[in-house]
Amino acid sequence: MRTRFFSLIPFGGLMLLACIGSSAPLAADGPATLTVTSQTEARWWWVDGQLEPVDQGTVAAQTQGRITALNVDVNDMVEAGEVLLEITSTEQAAGLSRAEAALTAAQAQQVESDNQLVRMQALLAKGTVSRREYDSAKAAAQAARGNVNQAKAAVVQAKEAVGYTRVLAPYAGVVSARHVSVGETVSPGQPLLSGFALTHMRVVADVPQRLQGQLQTQQGFNLRLADGENLTLTDYQIYRYADPASHSFRLRLPLPAQEGLHWLPGEWVKLGLPLGERQALRLPQSAILQQSELTAVYVVTAKGPQLRQVKLGDSRDGQVEILAGLSAGEQVLQDAWAQVSAQGGHYAP
Image (tube, rainbow, N blue to C red; front, side, top):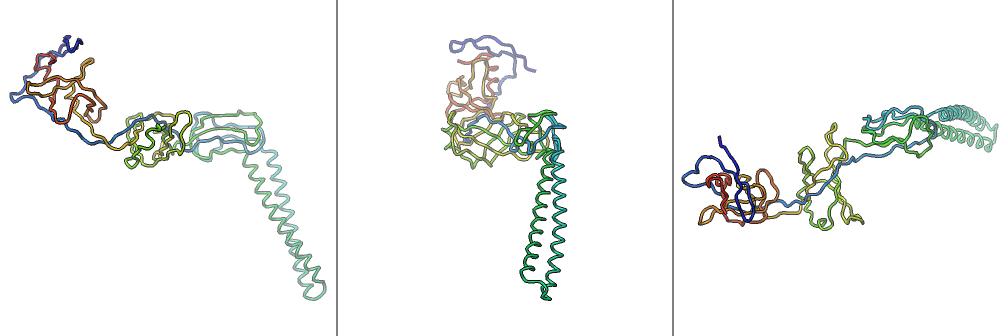
């Protein structure tokens, strides 16, 4: 078991916290080294994105009346076709009764007109009635059929008006806002309830104007969710105009259909914009010496390992990007802490 303790060591005008302790001696053939190489990797620009539902909206009243029942409230889950609220239907039911009565009368008139036309046809064949009288009976029969069709349409319209008194959920989802209460009188067009569906979600983000022409969309977009899940999205839509305030372009990317509450509207995510490829230097985390303000590696030189400060970039799969301080072809020690221990816990200047 390795025991470590710390002491302050001067380095470049700074007092650095050095780790000193017992460790196994280095092998006779020297510590393991790595050759710094440049590798080609995808270039990403990360922006903040937000999840939003594809299907969201507000249900409005389509008839006039007083609200008699309100079956849901904010944050309630509803199923498609579920009754959200009910409006008084007295006037609408009376209108349906009148329409059905008018249809019955029109159908009776049509039966009478059709019978009259049959009788006139028989009399016309015998020469008892004139052609004019027959044509008049035929026109009356056609008018009766038109009245029946008109009455049927009125019944359909009246039934639709009755249906407006029971407001149904257009899709399964969550109620996000309630605009009315029981007992209120509403009129056509008045907002009642707002909601959204959870099945189909999408990511929205703003692309800076300077990057809009650099996107290499054939690589796909990299999405990092709050729970650590990573997705590659290839389907996207970018607006054809920039926001006049921020001068950025809105980007929308649909997510796969989900079941349950895995992704929720309003969540912040990280979206990687593909900008082609770049050359990068990366080293394993073990080669990096990080202590207080010091970030350095041990570079192998003719005089032995020398400590050199470096500037780090992002970390990925245990590999840290070196932004400055090293060049391709140089060699570094694979285990920086082993070198510190070999020097008695002191950093080499």
